[in-house]
View 1 (cartoon, one colour):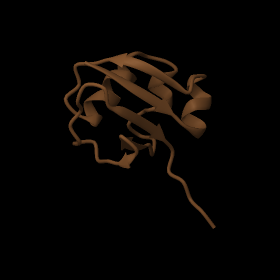
View 2 (cartoon, rainbow, N blue to C red):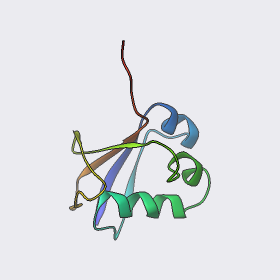
View 3 (spheres, rainbow, N blue to C red):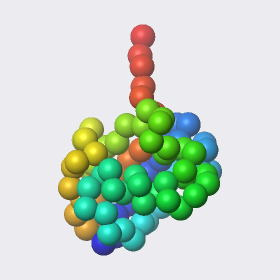
View 4 (spheres, rainbow, N blue to C red):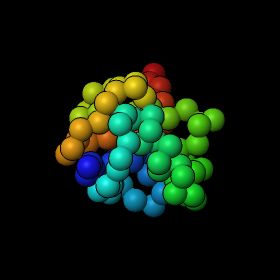
Length: 83
């Protein structure tokens, strides 16, 4: 299935792109993250399992277990703090 993946803040800076269309077989957000990490650098470093990375599915914060469907938008970004 095809989905749109958007990258924000330090994740975008590390990858050098803001978004891309991805063909995936991932069933959920966690599996998609693993597929992207498996591409190697720079994805492996930016989305590594040891890094705090938040995910949103169609602009709603989501857990790694959230299922994916054709045409959805996924966003990856670092945790944000405010003050």
